[in-house]
Length: 167
Image 1: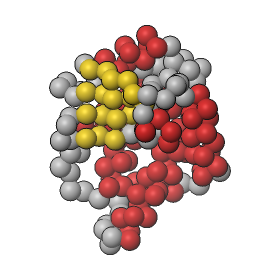
Image 2: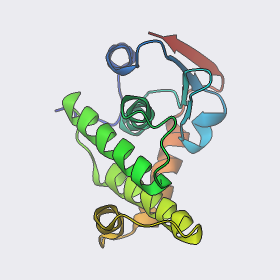
Image 3: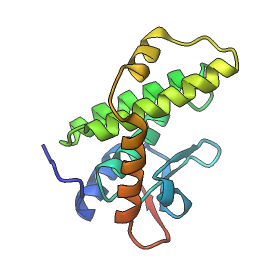
Image 4: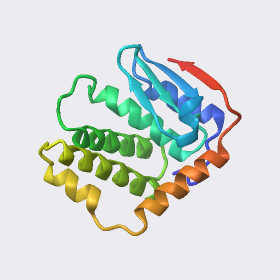
C-alpha cells in the first residue's frame, strides 16, 4: 500500500482513467481547489474536483465518482444516506488503488455525513440508524482534523487554474 500523501501525476492519471465513469468529464482545479470539495453535475455529466495530487484529493475524486456509480443523480433518499454511500464507495476504491484510508479521511467523511444528518433532521426527514451510528461514533478531534486536512491540502495545491481530464 502507498503511504505517502503525495501522488505522482502519472499514477493520478491512471487512477482517474480507471474510475472516471464512461461518458463523464472531469474538471480539476479552479474554485474547487481551495476547499478541497467536489461537485457532480448531472446535467453536463461532469465532475468538478480539486487537482488530484494527494490522498485526500484522490478521495474527493473517488467520492464524486461514487455518486455516479451509485446512480445518485435522481435519488430521492435523504442526503445523509446518499453521502454515506458515496463515502463508502470512495473508501473501498481508495483501498483498491493501494492507498490507506487514513484517520484524517475517515474523520472528515464522518463530519461531512454528520452535517448532512443535521440538515436532514432540520427538514424532518428520517435518519438511518446505521448511518447515524457511523457518523456520530466517538472519535477525537473530528472538526480539528477536518480543518487541518483542508489546510494541508490547500497548502499543497498546485498553481491556480483548471485542468480537464476526459476519459
